[in-house]
Length: 165
Image 1 (tube, one colour):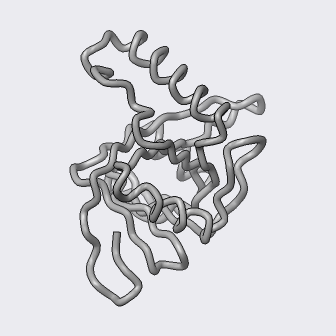
Image 2 (image 1 turned 120 degrees about the horizontal axis):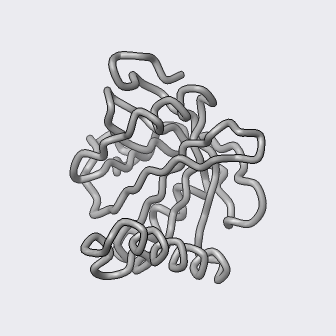
Image 3 (image 1 turned 30 degrees about the horizontal axis):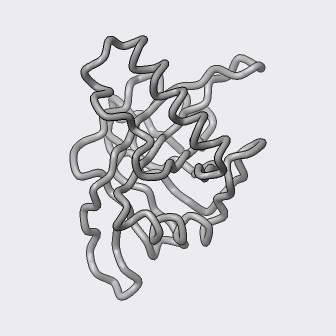
């Protein structure tokens, strides 16, 4: 995150996941799920609310947030009119399907979950078990009113240099 005083972005301990969601109209939607540690969660929530994110109930609102994509990687989430920047500590690779969905719509859904939503040992499970366990954990957090959501514009180059606008 970067402060309002113009300092460069600092890497925050965060977990990022990218997904592609099918919709009733057939056009897929790119989705980003973010969890930040308890020491920074309050600040991130404040930045999200200032950018137009709301509790995850109903359709996600359009926000002033921007997801910057560089090549096939998600580079950062920019909030509060560019005054706050949240970056992953390690590269977050976007699949060609995610890049295509984000590029087609020009926006992606961003879900921010509370600390502890990612179950321990998740990555050691078989793929379908991992999906099922995380989906249950996410739905529990959403039902408890602890997840924020919104759509963010997608800015940057997609895979192979194709523009994501």
